[in-house]
Every structure is written in C-alpha cells, then in structure tokens.
Length: 91
Image 1 (cartoon, rainbow, N blue to C red):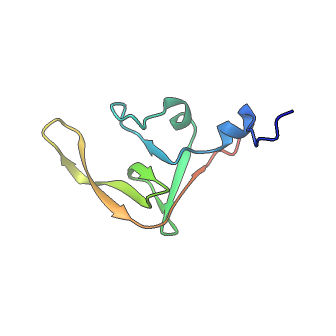
Image 2: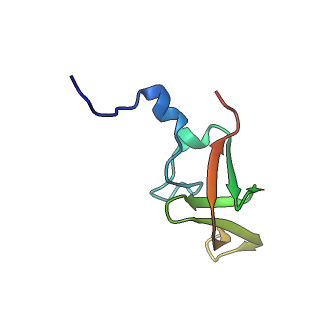
C-alpha cells in the first residue's frame, strides 16, 4: 500500500499550475488548461489583461495598453502582489 498523497486525474485537472502563460512560445504555456475559462484575481481585483502569472513568487504580467514590441508581441509590465487564479467554468 502507498501512504503517499496521490492526486487522481480529476483532482489534478481541477488544480491550476503555480505559473501559467498565454504565450505559446513560453515554457509555462499549457493549451489544455487555457482551453478552460481561467480567471485571475490580483490583490483582490479581477484582472482580464493578464499575460502570465506566478503564485509562489506573487506577480503577474499585464499588458501595457496597445503598445507592441518589435516582434509584434504586447508589451507587459510585471506587478507584484497576491495572485489568486481560478477556473470560472467550475466543471
């Protein structure tokens, strides 16, 4: 018998990763999780322009208006605070 705390696939799908990005070129990109409706509360306020977050380090990257870098990607700003990601759809 195993006395380890093992998560079932259903429980694992209900947990969000510590770090997630919407950029397909990022190593933290996960299309399966992003296919579900993800919400992010930052400092208790719902944010809709989050490009990447990290819960353990306590930061989010948000878009800086309509500005683009030289590759056509949106410019982002890293802001520190409490990060609370959640699933909006509640499967």
